[in-house]
Image (cartoon, rainbow over all chains, first blue to last red):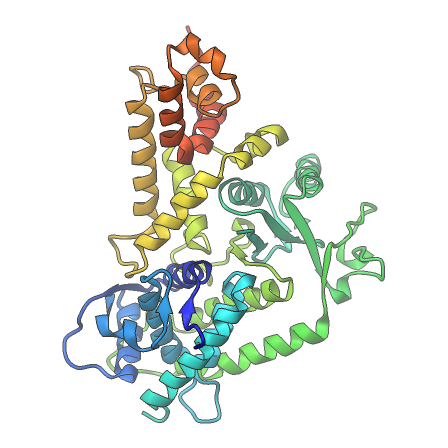
Length: 139
Length: 318
């Protein structure tokens, strides 16, 4: 069976990339249950709003299970989910435009260590499945 | 894990750039890529020559590498005259090909298209904090990432010489990455002053002992894996490192009553530059020595830097 675990250096890269995104984009975030039952597009809008108002964006704990991947460093699952919500919030909302997975992988590929190429391929498959599951286009 | 960074907007450099590059190669990076056609900003000629010479030394130490766009260099990789006035023509170590770069930048622009449209659109009832400036900032960061990826590097480093108001809406000189921000804060909190005061040999010693500090930075990153909110920031991470460093050195009696570092024991013994026989001088047995080395290992580089730079801030003995 093919391993779906993301290696430790790559997990650290995901976490670092999330920290850099927070720092450069001035996005405060934490893992906590937000009020209401938020869909992914609603979470993306919430992130944009909280960022504009310098407020802490709440990422629901269950977001860590979106990707059905295992991580050598467990904290990486929420760091990846946070960046996915960010990608949804800045990616195009039209069918012809790049989807959040393309944007996120492009961002991660440029920001992560070169040795993470195989893990990035695993992540592409997992993220594409999330794109299809949430079917966020046009919402 | 090796880590080579690309200096953001490295067409212009100044004294602060040298300091930022040194902070990186001392604290967390193996090398930094700087644009070969850089020019020294806003200084008189002797000081500009001094900065240029320092960068040449760092290049010879392999702490920086030089990169150029294809159009900036001749076939031998030397920077062409229009891009670099003067006779000292630099040679690029890496050249970014125009075709590959154009394709990647075009990809990036596609990705940003709707984000840009969104920024220009009015949102009734919403407070836009920065609007277009956010897009410019994002585009700048992403286009630097494109160049970094083309160079095969592992990340970015902010250049204080070229931080514009659009990139820095608060006007502050903010670092581009988390590691950079923590290192900058640690330097500030320990009042180490500019790292450009270090000699090449002292830089080499610091780099020999920076593995432990890199692990501390990794630990700080793990602490922010559940989110970075106003309570968990690079400033907070740096304060934690400085507190632990001070606790460790105090517990080990490496400081005098005034808080000054007892330089002889602090680095010479723990840095293992002395043979164990000399330990008798400090009344330490081998077991104690090994335990102390283990405890101090993450902080050896800070001990070295505080010994070399911190003392310069102290008043001369009376």
